[in-house]
Image (cartoon, rainbow, N blue to C red; front, side, top):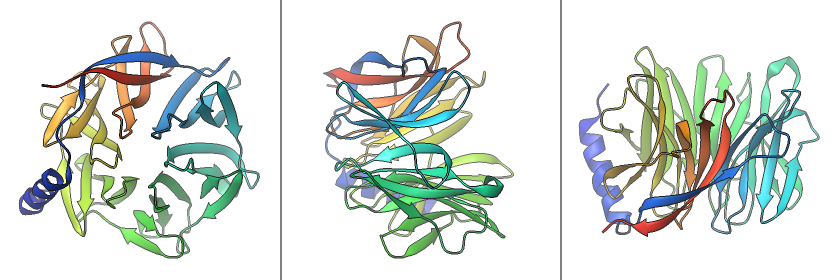
Length: 289
């Protein structure tokens, strides 16, 4: 499915609101591994360096965490089980979901130690919150009798988001310009999108078999993963109309989950010879000319 005219408009709009390119050519990576965890995946980092994400313990139970400086906090929503965390905003508010009966999920916002449910009223099979911007707008997915849809929540009302022609839509990230990143599924597989206003345009890393979009920062730089013909995962950042390929060389697979406004990236990688993902943080040490 093509949306050429829409993508031209999206591309022009992104160029107009983006700052000049400042993605580092070289990153210094450090491992982010929760003590005694089997696997760790950070999904969010704000401009204060606070990181949110998930880890699996030695019993293969999933937990949500917040990492700030030398302080590690495990986050558990008391309304259910199996809490998972994703995006974080400048104020430190984190979004995610917890499991309830019948394997459904409810979304939440965790801010100042308080959990607030995010549940689409028309959902019949669960709500998941993935992204939150600095104004508190939340995006995610919900399921009803017609399938899975994206949503935008402004604190009082929910807007349903559907990529044209898609069977499934998931809203992944949102920035302070209210630009939304989304994934969709249909018979052709996974596709990635950016939404400005009411227009949707595709995101495709050149040469990739599949592109998976993640979050977008306030400078309109987009974190991505892409898969090659050998099904190996790689990281990328879309900024200034270009795709910049960034891999953690310590492993065989890299997925960049988010990028903050200082170009710090976090994500996961597969250490050489291992079968469990570990987290990483990458900070730029040089900028593109």
